[in-house]
Length: 95
Image (cartoon, rainbow, N blue to C red):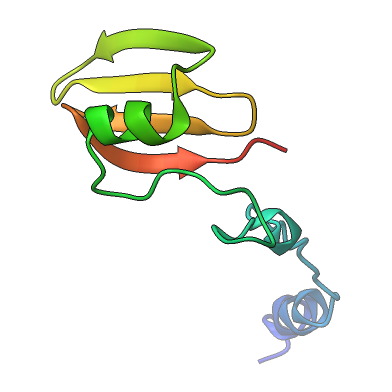
């Protein structure tokens, strides 16, 4: 019994050491810009490239399609539009 006492005491003491972890938030809710008059008006998911061109005009730059399915990026002054084939997949407002 006394042979294992130091081991038991050591285990009990090691379990009493305070442990902490840092929580890192990836998404900052302050940058969740609404797609309405209070935020940046931008294309919505499902719009076609033609509809985006008609409503928002020519982008400042276009990036050629990459990958499969092909993803294309159009950069406007206030937002970036990502297309899958010719349909808006996502629109991002950079901060």
